Length: 198
Image (tube, rainbow, N blue to C red):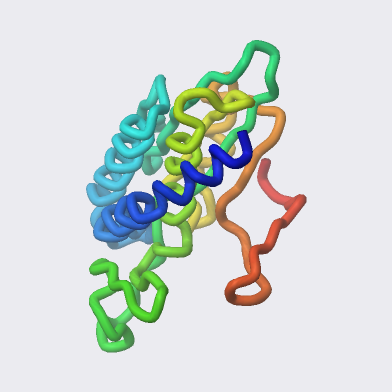
């Protein structure tokens, strides 16, 4: 299975990058004063992406006054653990255009890197989780649940309310968060625990 999985990931890499570029084009800034409709657009795009990747029961999770979140799942074998894949579809304000070499929401590949607001934090997490779903081709060894919130960049204001309201959907044995730091460029990092809201 390992070799097949590696081959599937390698074969899908350019598609995964293209899906990331599509997500980056949506200026989903969650800070006050920005267009909230762009957050609905980014949530819909993320939902469509994971649905097209093979997730089922895909839908927007909505609470009054909150930016929409995205949910989907991929059933695993009966009795297998459940892994929740977390990311967020909102981004920080881009700041002054003069400080950007290229427009912040026009992804640009340069010197082997993808530049644009949200490429690393955290639309890459959404693209990566969708790629995981595609790589397992509908048959993961665990049950996968996907949850993408839209308020991480403003302090996850309504995350506790989402966890309470959608506790059954978001119940999991393990959470994988695609939004933590790296120590050095080109060296993967794995954070094994975090303290916080969950």
